[in-house]
Length: 297
Image 1: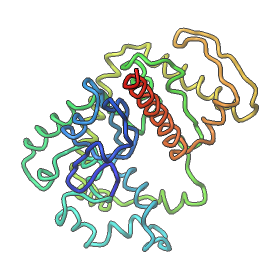
Image 2: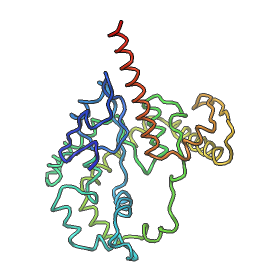
Image 3: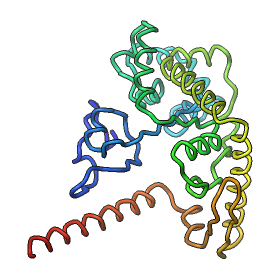
Image 4: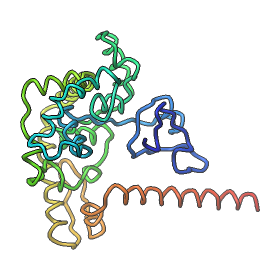
């Protein structure tokens, strides 16, 4: 179970790194959304950002990350969906790693997942949706980041990222991981993860409504962003020298150097987490030092 969540969704300050004299302003960790618990430890006015993936693609990803029993089968995912006991997952439990897990992660009430009351589902979904300032769509990653930039008035530099794993398929595993499924197998998964599909359809629709409201220049910015991000990654792949990118319609002038490229290309999740913990540690040390000085004075 994730250290930031337990089976009952009770998130408290003891689950997080200490932050002396203040509430938290940023949480970047796998965690289950519990609005009451989150609001209890975060600064007032905190904005919540969600992310959701097309349920079958999410299922493929988590299945091949964990599944070992069927790995020698020519189509492991199809074989799994053909097994009647796996279809029963949706009837025996509200969620698992293999069904309705995104809905659970985003905060959909577990007790309502087994309900057949569709209107009750949508009422709960609208409540959950209201918690998030924006929900990103994995399949439209660049579009999501541009929308995020506009929503929070960030710079183009703020959303630069590595392209190493974006739209990438591992050719060695491709045949098995991306083996086609029959209509029956797809329907089985849709029945297993009915809440995930409902949430994905809802957030996907609202996402495109937000995009439409941005106007035609949104697509100009997306095209510019893709080109810029590609150029940044190409530069970091080829040299460690500093480079200045000039200001344009969508960006201020910015510079990248060897430190930036190293972080972009080689820093994995744990290294970023360690860097964030170090920032908090230094802030805590400064807080303690200031308070000690006040006491002495």
